[in-house]
Image 1: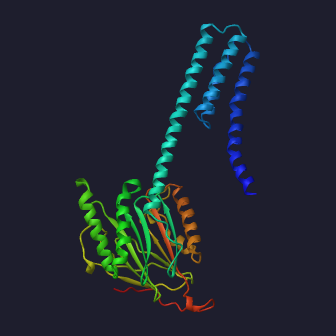
Image 2 (image 1 turned 90 degrees about the vertical axis):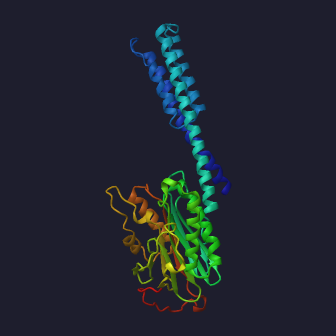
Image 3 (image 1 turned 30 degrees about the vertical axis):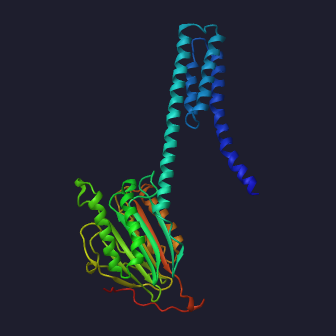
Length: 387
């Protein structure tokens, strides 16, 4: 059964191309025949150039060249049929068809080369994405994770937005960030921040120490590589999230990053009140500059982390995407289903084109193992924060 499906998938593109190729061939035959039956003062031969022009829309240079050859041959036959093959007018028509066909074939060759180069760029972008932006595990520790990335530039699979998750001794740490800029030009800073987080998340037990280590890494990088004309203009926002195994709460530090959304199973949506620190790279700050905010995070709750490319996405009239209202509408969906709704709705809002990279990560705390299948969970108040 699978072999038949595979053979069918191979045959379908060829059958489609062969069916389309019949259009210019039939067109050549029709023009050649009709030109012989219309009055002698009507010349349809120049219309033969339509055939290679049509072929170029769906075929490569070889097939287009073949149709061009048939076109010139048809014009030659028309001239021979009427006994005027070597007249000045017919020779000019044949030469014109040959030149036009050659130009169309050249266009096809250039287009094919551009397509190959674009495919190479995309393959490099995909490789960079797999190396730098590792796929997040579906389940890590007590939480289930799903992620979505939409790059603003079509040739890039990733850009200035980033996310990472890692297991530590006492729980799970997750970071979502946004480097100033978009597309390929921001990959360098994004790679730096991802590497710094993956290394520092294990080495610093306190969340403020982790934030200070990331600040030091970004500041040192910018001091070495930041162009003089962009001094002070390159930075990164980040949200650091820590989910301890023991205790139904979430600790987070915002470095100039938007606060997450907290969706509860009872259909309520909460935007935690955070104490944001400056973005990374603005100025060297120590651990004492970062405030840990805590929010209840019960089994079944979902935290939605996102970058500003989501909330700043605009429609044709300039209206921002109503992210909170739309997320609340799909409350109750799982992490993957929620991302599916957000992706489809966000692209519909923007007409399928984003002006900035956008990333969304959904995190759901799974029920405790010791609670059993029918255990009841008491939900604490969702408002408030700690330091």
